[in-house]
Image 1 (cartoon, one colour):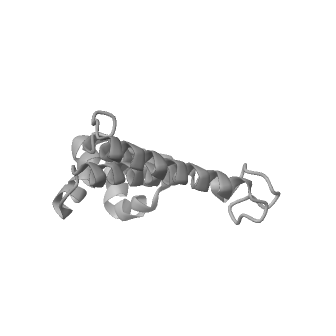
Image 2 (tube, rainbow, N blue to C red):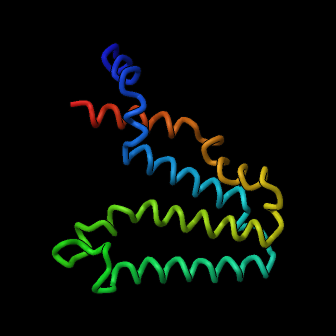
Length: 145
């Protein structure tokens, strides 16, 4: 345990660049944004349709980045696995969820100030801070060989 604490103290900022911590933060921001914008509990038809259009644009963009033969996200062998597209799939899906939920919040009026926007983005991290801590400790354990 002493070694773990020493390692976190000396190399704590190195863990911020860890894919595990980055993915945990992105997932928390996306889930928090969806929950905070009340995407699945609101009945504003204009906001729902606008969010559906944005979701379709996000999905079509992700698919086009995967199937176009000249896409820079296809692997060297021309396949999807392994490729940069697979490596960036979690951040891309999280970013799409954030864009969809923020769009819903803006159109429905739930997000009408900068403060409301920032609250929307940080809701998941405020609600589940132990996930960030667990991801940081796990990143230290996994990368400390």
